[in-house]
Length: 379
Image (cartoon, rainbow, N blue to C red; front, side, top):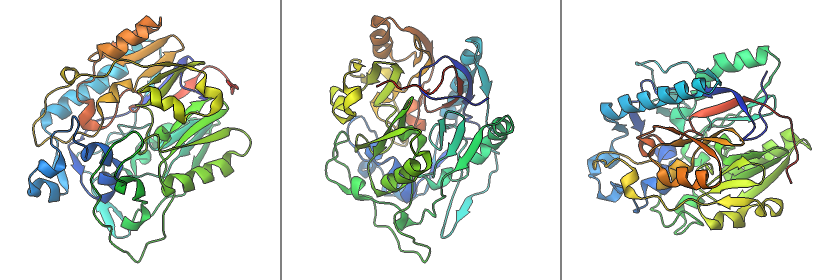
């Protein structure tokens, strides 16, 4: 039975994403907007897009080297095996077919990607599955690859809800955050290209990822960086009514916050930077913040100019809690491991080599469907 209210209660069942047939990125406005903080920043981003050849920038399909994909598949399967060894039931999405056709909307099309970062397009609250409105066109049908698993939980009594699906025309997106010369914790960025008009434009639409929501029992912290997020959050507030307290935090990040802050257990956060505390609602500012040392370049593989980096160097904060004392951490990140062990957490090291190329860590790759516990008030 679906039951998941927080990020730390003992984990019983989890969906682990699939990397099968992940071979390229479809570079178009929704993709560039979603990843803009890392695509266009100069720190630790090689290549910076301006330094890439114009041919690379203009071509929509950005191919990923087969070696990286093979190693990604090995690491994802290793994650699934580790969870099973820890006694957690592991469920999997339908693999993306090798010859999957392009997804077509009104006035756009995009090549699909597998259901790998499955935290993004679904929000689980208690016994309810909420499919969230996708931000990237290539991921528009991603949750359909999870339909078989969702149907099994639905048949067992879970609620299954889908937020309004966006049109995703160029003018669906609020570009103000991306176009700002400086963002709160992101830094200077280069502008997104001017969007094109379409007869299907309906204005700024609801767009929100599950990874923008930090689940703390009755309290939900939701990152709002633009009008798309605000509109979707309003829907969420109406839908949830008084069952949860929804706290809007503004521009903690461009979208996801689970490589900036995660709750490891009641009273303890793992955070990127002390400044994150300033964004939190007052009741949670008193929680302890574990801040690992800054990551170093030698923790990551060295890539070529033709390789596209999609995450910041802080991606290894994207950990997965098995219970309030046990945490899965990338074995290539000793700074996070040592910081958690110093706080008496049991760390389970798991390999994940190319996390900067594929946009996610262990929290992104998983959807915890069954955890022990009930809806609690942790304020």
